[in-house]
Length: 120
Image (cartoon, rainbow, N blue to C red):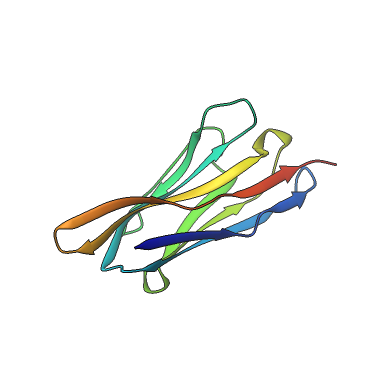
């Protein structure tokens, strides 16, 4: 099995920064795409950013220029650096990964989520 564990959430003032981490562990051969999603109370889950194994990235328009996704393939870890945080960034942030557990078996996995609250 594969587990994803996020960390780094918390309470931050508007304009502040946080860095989220997500570590994948278990029976992992390789990880292709990794992503961060978020879900605010009463809203649908939203894709925040994605990154390929080679480092190609995409961002939601709402976070472009403020958030940066990166990964360390050797550590099976994806990061989300969040700067200039706004109240509307408040949400539970979850990581997602496409994991090969064998050369022909790929599964999609989710972390449990970490709360980010932006408030003064």
